Length: 92
Image: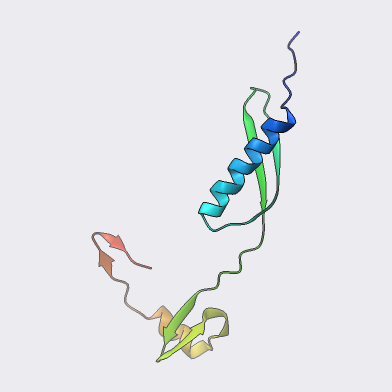
């Protein structure tokens, strides 16, 4: 009969902090995370992230605006822009 592995509270805190540091390095905020053991005995961290407040801003016809605030004419201007390649990679 196989013995069931259990993580100690210290191990759970360690894995939660490790996930939080990795998320912060990417500019993300973790609201909560669950630390689980798979049947194979591997640790799995499931993180629940805060909604992102980042919004794209573009310069259109001489003005900076959020894409969500652009009217149809400005959105059409953005869609007709020429995309350029830099070092073989298409810029966005």
